[in-house]
Length: 237
Image 1 (cartoon, rainbow, N blue to C red):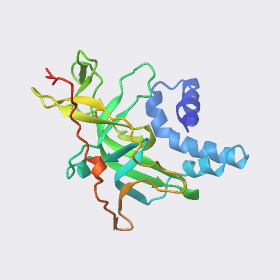
Image 2 (image 1 turned 90 degrees about the vertical axis):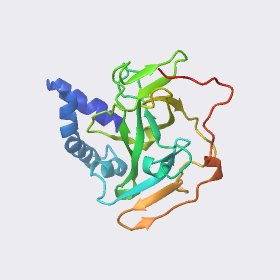
Image 3 (image 1 turned 180 degrees about the vertical axis):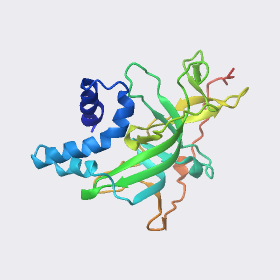
Image 4 (image 1 turned 45 degrees about the vertical axis):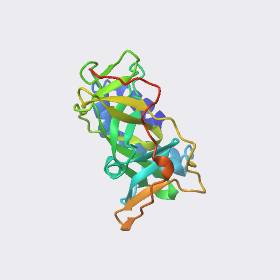
């Protein structure tokens, strides 16, 4: 998928002299991708897996309140409101290799899109913080810790990321100004088994079409004390 999206199609636009490549790419990629993959499939150069993606998802979608991926247990922020732990913080590395600044946000929705041939894709919809400008959107303290301004939200028409791209973080309110939050990266936990072909991952499901509402009891292992012992308190300016 990466080869078609960020390489082949954008190279075609560049060769055609398109100026605003990102905008045109967003507008035309879906139709181009379906045509491209269909041609490859008809000439036996690509398989049914890519063809099912190119034809788009089914109209039915499944929404989750919790999902396991990459060794992390994620919850939507609405689900976290009733829990003692924080599992809705998301960090994603940017695609721009020249910029090492990740994106930080809060998970609002978990959506599973289903395709033909049993294929599926899980997406995270997030409220992202605007960390485009140092000193305004983010800063780093003397220890190199990232601090984000949670009052500045990123205005974007692309709030979704692939669940497999997500790393988990949690946010600690500043003492002087609670809008500035310290970002703490969560280490992947080996507590849960990851998805496999034989076993579904942990999930709290809200299937709007089937009216399913499956709730699971909170595991005692989730009640993790996020305070750090042996480290002096930090005051965020």
